[in-house]
Image (tube, rainbow, N blue to C red):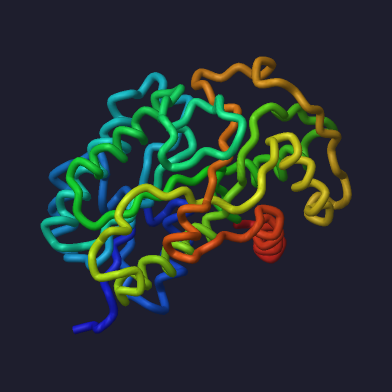
Length: 303
């Protein structure tokens, strides 16, 4: 029998899931489940898999993330983002396991001027945001040992994300229009995974106390703030070699000039103060985290 903790990672094929498998590999027995082996829309399958694996930690990195499509697929979004976390919380409590779940800045309406703190009133503008908020509430209603990490603007060297989209469009076009009145903190999957591994390891070692007084909601993003427009400009500035020095012109536009089915919060900046106070964990500044991803893309351009 392994003396290492057993960690179940859902959404193992996703950006955060892949990063988690890497981060936990040297300190835990990690079992990753992708959609083929664990469909989060199937309640019975969730229960069966968790009981079969019997994890010490469940990290729910799986989610319905098609923000615009969720407007027309409400039932599926709520099944995966709201019902599934509640079932995972029930199974975690049944097994005395720790549940870690990722939520989003989209639980807020974006109207606040300063960074959002965990106790600010939630008011999602979209079906996606509402489904993620319902997932938080489902976990809280079950109780048990749990951590809910709200994050924002997640990307990695692989998958579908803003950075890879910009690099692709930068090769194809001379000019791009990018929204300049939405601000947030771009956050890499690797930074999320490292912080998650460090915090969960500290919990198992009882560094933060034997009682689960630390259970609850925390904001977890890279530090700093930027608009999508400035983020795009920074990507092109730092990735000019990947683009063979053919950097496109980036034009700032308003959200109103780029209508989408789902509304986005204008201010997605989250305060990480509670995370630092409780666990003494800080994620990297967003620019240095971006550089790490660009290095990985350059090393493996087919990722």
